[in-house]
Image (cartoon, rainbow, N blue to C red; front, side):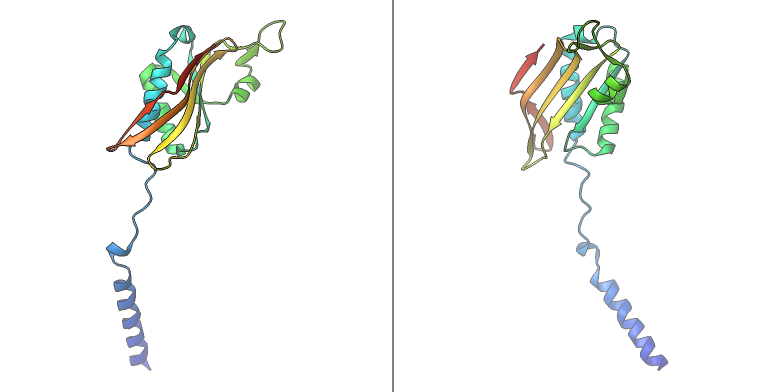
Length: 173
């Protein structure tokens, strides 16, 4: 009986060690495609440099990535840290609604439609999933109902391990 158990144990050990070699283990999926954070950082910096009057007097930057379908939370955090370094300003994640609820975005006196963000600017991204090395997106910088700048109908493309993007159109308010 001991001999049968010993043989069975040896047999199972041999099968389990030979059935799962290093080559058989599929590679872990990548967090994302090569340096997509650098792409987003480039878009943010390009938007930040457009219509710089919107940046006057701000003390922080809010970023809404709730509809950025192709970034992990870790990538969003890295991007926020890098953009804070680029601008020298505090960067936090907030939506327009969050900022309204916190009374950081307020209605202009006597109106029910004109809002403004006195102490900051809000960057918003709306993206699609990466498919076949590209995706479409819209990005904007918002300071008030009459103070915004954005890129729409943009296409990001991965070529030779590096991301680039083309702006479909630009808008200003």
